[in-house]
Image 1 (tube, helix red, strand yellow):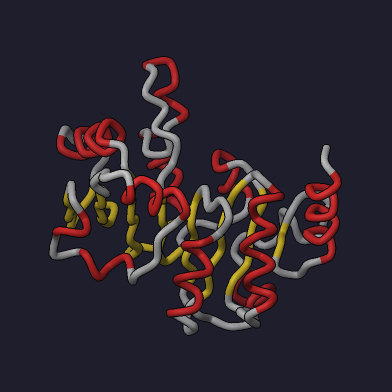
Image 2 (cartoon, rainbow, N blue to C red; image 1 turned 135 degrees about the vertical axis):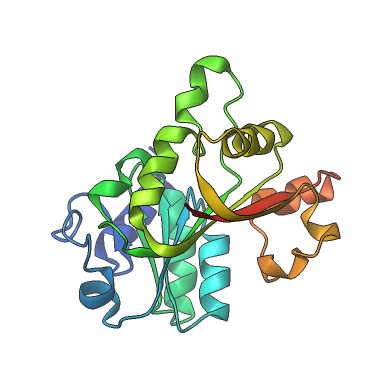
Amino acid sequence: MGRKKLERFEDNAIRYNVVENGKPNFTKLGGKWRTDHFKNNNDLVVELGCGRGEYTTGLGEIFTDKNFIGVDIKGARIWVGSSYAVENNLDNIAFLRTKIEQIDDHFASNEISELWITFPDPRPKDGDEKRRLTAPRFMEMYRNLLDDEGWLKFKTDSTFLFDYTLELIQTGQIKVKNLSYTHNLYQSEFMDEHHGVKTKYEQLFYDQGESIKYMKFQFA
């Protein structure tokens, strides 16, 4: 392991805004993120697979009256977003280092107000279907964690993953309400819903001429 990565892990280990294995609160914040971590009762917005945290920090800067948590397993990536939040005194932002399939160990039922899935690995191989972050088994987990009026918002450059997810919804394998979607976000009525925030990969795909797909819905 490189020295730079080790230094980032050392920073994460002492930062309040990084919750990870080895810290006393790692599995104790479910149902208590607002009261025990953020010390308020504001809405809780979670980004899955946040990477370097561009979206988590970008939204957190805009919506200072909400709490934001970026979730990713890569500690060196989380460090980037964590550092930005520290440097800019963004106390409404935190990062959780864990696998997505284990997030129900860290959040209680109905605790999350809004859930973002931003540019996940599309995993196009048939054998990888269960690992797609929009697969039915993950969707059932999200359904449980979102509150009754909570929104799931999904952005991707992958036509394959987007159409796969849309088919699950349209065939009733995932039951939702108030579904809206577009295959070209920046040429649609939903353009303002990204709030001018782009992840590193989103900017890369956009610059390469890829259309950005977007959908949002509530679970039925």
